[in-house]
Length: 235
Image (cartoon, rainbow, N blue to C red; front, side, top):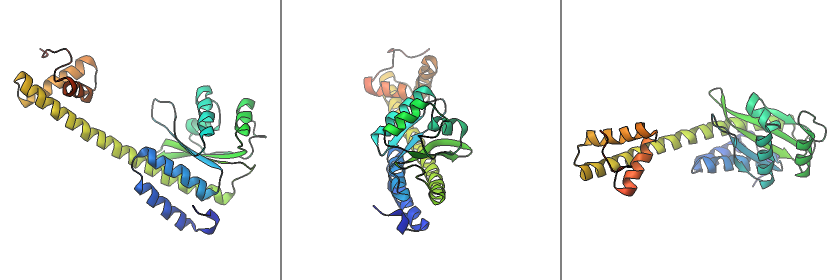
């Protein structure tokens, strides 16, 4: 814990870099970002929502569980500052929820009831596309100064790089795991059906294509059951 007013920007982001490096996966990464934002900005709460193409925004980290419910309502209704930040890829500042009329009165009442008076929503861009949104909240109107906004922008840049890096690492890890599964399944088929390595891979690939099933899922079935999905070799 630290007082953000007593540290230089270099101190703040050096600590953030260490925390993000130590995080074990994307979940821990965004949790570290949200917690760090609270301390770095001296705000009341923070959150990170992740964005994936073709999916609804995912509430990935919150420092206050009340935020998760507020987000779910925005996602369900398609209305609110978070949705605006996601769809328009813009920074959204809410100076005072009680006087801001850009969204519904129901949204304002729900946010105020949660003890929130002002907020910042910052997209996390990577290669021109947002991978998430960092949001910070204050229990006071006009709770964020120009200096806070500058720090929040830098924090969002760090967070976007960390999220993109973790996603890439997770994807590579999944690819390695998939290759291992396929290799084990091929070995089972070679023994069970007396086929060579090339034929074993072709069998797995054919089942994957014919049933529109991921290759790794077909391989996992073979490993779990020691047989092909329908028990027969494809023609």
